[in-house]
Length: 232
Image 1 (tube, helix red, strand yellow):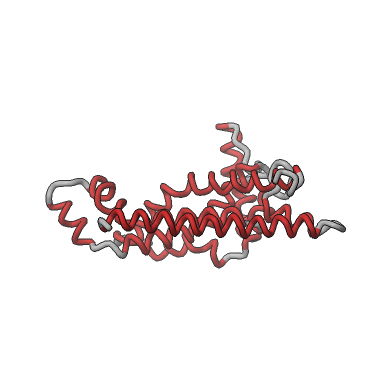
Image 2 (image 1 turned 90 degrees about the vertical axis):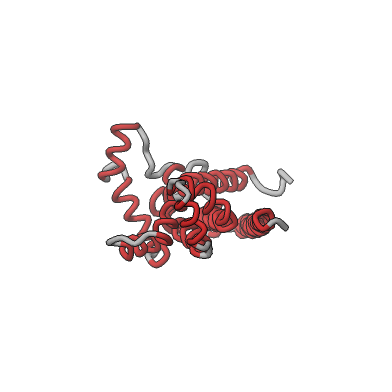
């Protein structure tokens, strides 16, 4: 199978998997917290927060990438601070692709987890609270186990979205082979050169296979977790 793809193609696949995995890892804790905040809390600015969370879904991806470049580029306020303080450079690096993928995938993750939280009867959480349990302990022992299928679904959706992200990624980190060339960027690059259609076709097929495998795995794990929770 190693002969099926060229080294450059395998490199793009490996980078995409790494970027998507890290995008989920760094955004999942924040996604769970924001989803719980939107589902269970009432506060001033809730509509604004909800709008900001879902903004990447309606903004052109290139616009999102330009905002990231302006903020997190070496001359940007955040990017300059990160480089001077921690030596961390995001623009035109694979780490920047992780940031772009995480931001573009965040709305899908939050929505899936929020729907799962809203499906949980608040009386269960309130009952645990009346017994003296802290809000954090109630969430960890009552809410989180019940919403675990939704968390898994949100993580898989975010993984698939981050792996397929193109517009924001190519604007923020460009399309550098071996450094920032992810699967969508590689497909685009192959389509720009004569004779590259075969490579693009192989990568498209692989993208479909990975996405389907992720969805099937998510469905299987969610069902297993749900059956365990309900005692089936």
